[in-house]
Length: 342
Image (cartoon, rainbow, N blue to C red; front, side, top):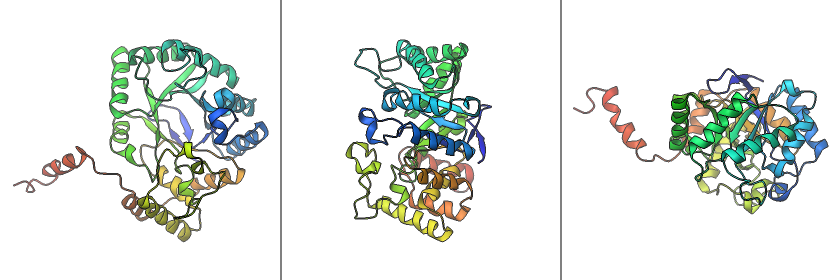
């Protein structure tokens, strides 16, 4: 296992992060995994033994059960772990128990600390944008948590590029702690993060931590063209299909499987290794419900795709050329070639 800086911070995290969305079995989240404490303990121990030091949770995962189970699994090993959790989602019917108000952030942080059995969070992530609460209120509250010693680093997730840049500018203006990472939906099937967000993160020094890097298991090869996937798999559950798969996505999977077969590795390993080749990626979040899934994912760090293999995957999975990207690509030519526009 190798370790990378989380953005331009001084914090080193394992290139694979273990995600705990499958821990617990309450409400909506039961369909994700429904793991009990012994199963969670085994997976956490396996991750630690493999060199993973980065663990990701959220208060909404099984409405606190995931955090509680992760805290128990790391008991006595807290100093070996970088713990990330998130705030934003609704935690109860109480009117203010949702969002990114100072009220909800402060209370949610206290609750997460108790459930995790720790007195600080390594990385506190806002789970999504809150269109009701002013950014100044959110960022001020997060800054206070850092200066109180309850949080060490800040991150965001599921932001538009303009929202992220605005947040960074506000924090700089007020000399508040800035976001050091962006947790974003990113895989070979979903590379739209590269259009605006990845260049922004490169410029501003944020590390990207991709979630759903296998697109709910699609890129592991569980869902062959024209066939029904396993009934217990995440993409087989209608309300967990964030991304609709089309024929072009099967072309991506074909290339992934071609490379996997040539190398004697799994399709999942190829898909994870591809993201690890991206310069803005600090750590890729992997989740598992079975030990064999995690063991296979861990092997993705034991080898590297060649430049030619990355290029082949880039070509088959290229994101759409949206405006103004294509126009800027054209107009930059007069910088690169003085004779081009004459």
